[in-house]
Image (cartoon, rainbow, N blue to C red):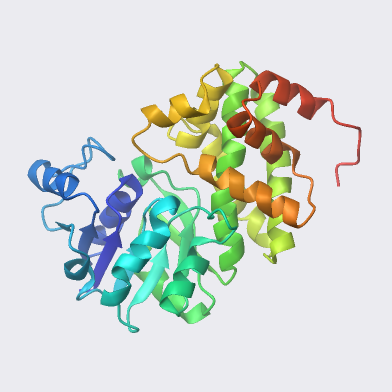
Length: 328
């Protein structure tokens, strides 16, 4: 049996722990809060982040970084993007070159770096990534889904594929780490726009337009940064975008819906235990679009709603009243 450590005790980290446990790996999960770890050990359930899902008693939970990774063959990083760099620095002294490291965190930091870029700078080694349409609530219940693992080294992605893949968790491989990560991060911003549309009471036609044109903006920014076009029409692109824009499991869509109904950015943040990644990633996406002189109207309007207190209905009206143009 292989030893796998999950760094991050949130819903997604817990769901991946269940996948890896089902594949007969020895699984350890690390969490920053010893109180949450103690509660999980006591209840055999992640009450705060993934309630009503029983956790096998042979998954080990700890808040000690050294203990968590000491004997790990594979390390999966699943912490919110705003805590990613800090967490990597905490674990850096305890990691060995032989361990395979994969990031399942979806996000970009305020300077425009992806999570694997941050980890590679700190650890001075390649980092693989996992992304795709995979809500934790469904994965934890073994509902079928498909994701992508990307590594610059194709051999490494195939090796990791074998750890994760089973009869309900299908894994494809890729070498486009950048595209896979950008798709997973930028779709959260478009999901906020889709949620705003729901909150305003608009219909399926509106949401379809947001998803389609949102994909165009994701692809446009991704290709400017050097990602592969085909990645964005795959699972980590259009696949993740569809599920995040349409599902009630999506925190980003739900947060957007609350914006559309009149709540403000700060009010929503105060009421969420878990991170709404699109709020943080929107700032970085706008900076990147300005750097490359790109026109990304949906992302820009979401940014104005979040950070300039713009009325969501005015934002939607301005999107519709932009000058006429060709689709392609």
